[in-house]
Image 1 (cartoon, rainbow, N blue to C red):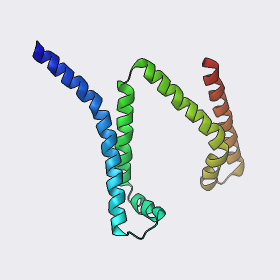
Image 2 (image 1 turned 90 degrees about the horizontal axis):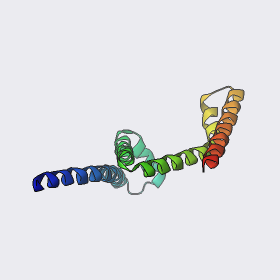
Image 3 (image 1 turned 60 degrees about the vertical axis):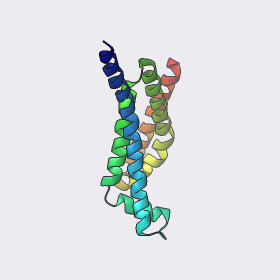
Image 4 (image 1 turned 180 degrees about the vertical axis):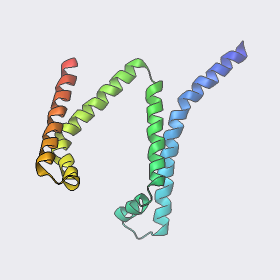
Length: 142
């Protein structure tokens, strides 16, 4: 009986540790990659170091992937109330980005990709409206 309890406790504690380990390993990979790139050229500027690190995006992709998987796992293992609050906070950040970043940064990025200026303006305006509607809905629910 005591062994079953110990096994269940070990499994539960292991499940709680795994997301944290994934996040820490992801951050560690990113830091080690930055140190290796810096060691190759110590006189390089931070911008050059980051550009050299992003040139083959596999290492940073793996680091970001591990961190995202850890965050998602931690989200799914949290309580129902924590999930609800986390989702609400994420939606609030998304609404803020759509309201402020949509008409500015999104239009700047889309201008480089899409040649039709009227389509870019329409998408910027649409992101602004969607952000406002989402923001108003989140405030109304509170």
